[in-house]
Image (cartoon, rainbow, N blue to C red; front, side, top):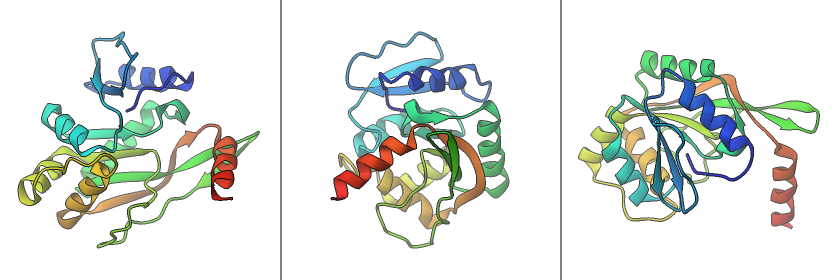
Length: 195
């Protein structure tokens, strides 16, 4: 997950550090992050979407699964969320699992369902949400069969998703397993960018 100076980052990091399901937390940062737990490791990188970063991470990981969190400062999840992701991944033998989530907007929680993955979809803006669990076995098989991640800056995850989806399913968990905080500010920012 990427490092953030926002207050929610530390809370999300603690959930991972305290979880018995998590062996190691890799925090990507450009500068300024110092791990405070032996379970946490820092890795210099500008983006979680970089092909170079994905090649380095996959080489380091020794677990069955890798959980990618793209906005840890805005995500609220529980240890039960991690258990559910792993249970679904194991029972479906999927290459990747992702779920619906809740958006916190002012004093309300709004449901945010994401789409089912369409086999053969090459759309790069597909909404997987902010938390994705990926099978390391599926990734390594895909990289061996289709080649390593290209040295792209923003399309490493896109490349991973395409390669993994050729041989394994990408499973949409139709449950609201986590919450994204502060959605209203993000929606306002999105609207102003479109105008």
